[in-house]
Length: 596
Figure 1 (tube, rainbow, N blue to C red):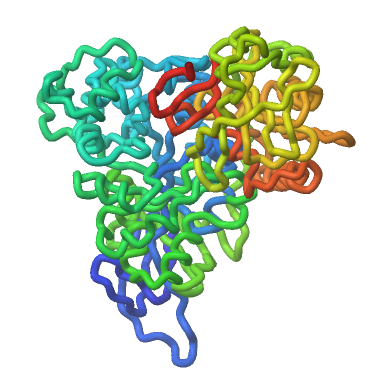
Figure 2: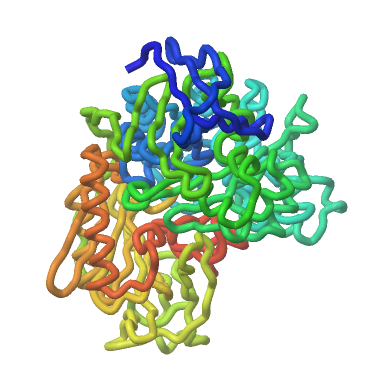
């Protein structure tokens, strides 16, 4: 409970880069004074730090509602998140955003939500909702909304799309930062994206810019951001290489180093912190519940220090930079600040002993003091159970833009087909051209070659099943399916035979959202009744249930991936190169168009 009390420890002053024994006097949820003290002889002091902040996270990906996410996160010293409710917005629109904000307010934790900028993320998939520029501006005017969430429509930015520019302008006009999402952009393209610059005259376009200008986006009027000549999209968490990140840093961006359950860019980017400590932050982006039980931003701090990076630079990225960039109401361990701080055992492992938010003790000795909250559900799910024949592919195809696009064997001029290659620990995929396996005139999965069928099922209405092939999952039997499928959250599934695919998909449909795994002998399903993305149950119980179904995909089905369900959830994410599958067909993420 809040009240007057004191805490003594070795205070780590990040701004002044010093450490000294101190007593914090807490009153009314704020730090009233910080007094140097003489430590008791022979009694080691634990360290006092500002709380950790996840600088970009989709709470929905934890499969937990915000209040349960907070219960788990505070144990690891996290006091605040910069949270993009993009996932639930794609399913339930404004109602979904309101659900996240209202549920977050029920617990002592500092959620900072953004206004989703790209709902739907693209016009090449079926989503559950649309947020236009007027609705985004309405959200931005709310005090709970701190920023414009990741602008994934990079072609829209580069082409001066009217709706995109209106959203960016509204955020800047209100003094709220704009988050970016531009995987792989370098050089001139990165600079133009960061500045949200209108395209130059046709004659002045480079070849790369001409390629982007030809991409399919909504009608563009090439109107500049009036009054914002130096307008900037200020962050990016999608850098895969240090070279890409350096380009963006030099053009004025801040880089958020991501280490989630599937996308892991820490090792590639962490050394940038040595020279850019004021412009680097940490995030998880997408973190499954089993991972959250084990640790959060504290783990990244431990890894960075073990790599030899200066402790103050590490703590700037983990605690200070997010507060300054997003203007968060989160304390930085200064007199007069909100009493948001943690007590850690040491500055190597960052074992969190206590966590305080606004002077309230919310975690102690690895036990959360945040109480579970009863909540209702919101959802948008309307499709019928499928039949095995819905998953069949007859003949040979170069692509599958529609369900009838597969050519017969006699018509095929090239017997290879495009195959998605999933990469462990990455959101990007490769495009392969491989020979299909044909039996009785049908294209089928080949577990020996690890070329498996992948499908996306429209969850919002009954429609033909989109089908393609994928390599990298390593399944030997059965199938797995999920209604967590960025960004529109249709049902995505991978399996070794059509019968298993059908069973796995129908388990998800039965629950109106969830994740499932089936083998020849058993099946498991974890229902996610909140938008087909989250459970409203106890976070630790959901984490345990997820651990069991994840174990089944590896031990029974044979998946070789570190996080099969998280990887699966990104195989329909069209804004990440190179080859993905939407409910409308196979998609080229480089050309931003369907495979032809």
